[in-house]
Image (cartoon, rainbow, N blue to C red; front, top):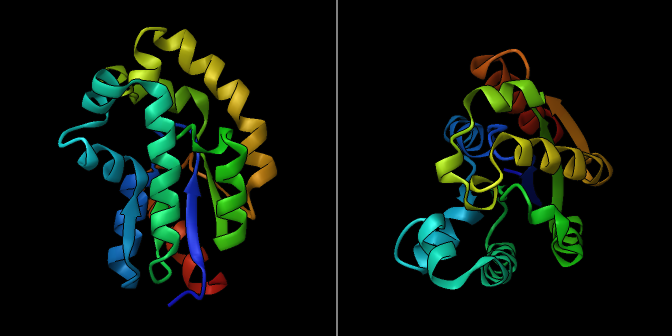
Length: 169
């Protein structure tokens, strides 16, 4: 069991939630997803939260979810793609855990991202995904303790993340 939280960061569609859940099951480490926590607080989905309260309230709720999770025993925490853009969130993650960037190539993200599930990307389409990637990648790179390149498929990413978690934490 890790002695600190393991924060998964990366672009929407990089695999934070799916890989995090799978590795948590395999290792017995608890798992949480900040987007799911925020969505539950509104009684629906992330899209429901955005529609009801807007992006600013979503970002505040995201920070609240991080604070809440840091009070629990160490776990794997999947963060929203833009969580790292808030300096307070970066401070929380650095203070309470280790940070793994799941770096998935932009072309792979573009090939299977579902824009209708991403309220902050929906209106701008794929051009917005590209712009967001270019803006956020340097922040992910700077913040990460460890970078895992997710470009060899789901099973290889699960294997790699699982090994990193077991061997380094």
